[in-house]
Image 1 (spheres, rainbow, N blue to C red):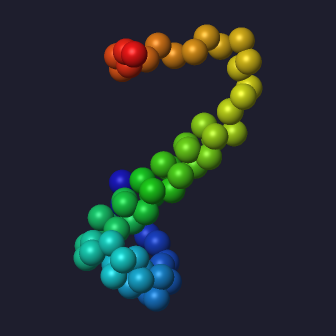
Image 2 (cartoon, rainbow, N blue to C red):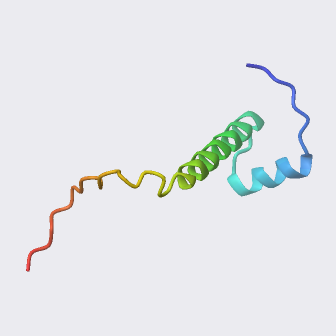
Length: 66
């Protein structure tokens, strides 16, 4: 989908330097993916402790002996 954006040149250049992503489209995609990941993590953290009746998740690690 094509969209016209007005971007702050200094902000765009800073993002380029920090990420090493030179192409504007790829840089905007990476920024959107990072924003989505951050918000998903924030929402998941907000759920902490909201299901007190939930059984513990099974572990795959072997138990230590002795």
